[in-house]
Amino acid sequence: MSLANPTTNDLTVETMVGAGGHSAEFLRRTGPQGRLLGLDRDPAILEVARGALEPFGERVKLVEAESGALRDALGRSQWGPAQILFMDLGVSSLQLDDSRRGFSFSKDGPLDMRMGRKGVTASEWLATTPCAEMERAFRTYGDEPFARRIAAEVSERAEKRRFSTTSELATFIAELVPHRLRGRSPIHPATRVFQAIRIAVNDELGLLERTLPQAWEALAPGGRLVVISFHSGEDRIVKEFMRGLQQEATGTRLVKKPIKAGDEEVARNPRSRSACLRAALKSPPPDRRRHWERDREEDEDA
Ligand SMILES: C[S@@+](CC[C@H](N)C(=O)[O-])C[C@H]1O[C@@H](n2cnc3c(N)ncnc32)[C@H](O)[C@@H]1O
Image (cartoon, rainbow, N blue to C red):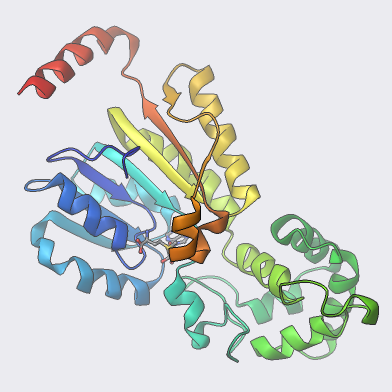
């Protein structure tokens, strides 16, 4: 929150609003005139956010949209530019905990994993994705060491008979682990593959690449882009994007190395263990830099 530096009356845009926890905090800190435009691709989660943010009334606009539609959503809102652009990537614990969504195998459910209404389900993805592409997804999105073997077996089985539930797939993968290695790992053998399928089905990395330039464009000079990612592939994309801003002198990285959660936060919220935060400050155009600095000093004195 401190890197986003919320100040009274700021406009915050949150491209993954989730249940609205961060949004509520931004609205508290930017009151009384501060506004928030929140996007989420998941209509069920957006309803939860609507309830949580209702007390802020007209100061909030929520839109069911993928982050890749940010430019359009901001244009339609007739708000902007933003002082804060906040992106908390990945999946929400509400989605993970709802067995009907099929993100997790801890309870049985349909093998769906779509965050929004669009696209193919995980079950369809497994039945239609070529084996080599599946292997690449398991390796790059899941860091799965047995990617080749699992992809070969899973695609052969899915061609004959589709996987339709989460426990069916999790059990099938667990049985592929060689006997001598069973029980050695602290995580379930299907954990990495489930993460990889979720990232592929929701095109999470592709959307991140399409969203970052729009997020930057949506910011006012002096505005801040703050991104929390949970996977090395995501963090690499954010790192490269922010390095590019620095090279083009359109922005400054606020942190060189990603910020990780401390022990206390991890104890409170175990999901934060893999979180990486990066932030950048948007520079004003060179011909406006002196004016902008003077205006900012005046605002701070006021
Ligand atoms: C980690 S949660 C956000 C949590 C939120 N910051 C909070 O305080 O509750 C991620 C949310 O982003 C949404 N999401 C993920 N990728 C998205 C995308 N590309 N576009 C829009 N929403 C997305 C998911 O549906 C989920 O609700």
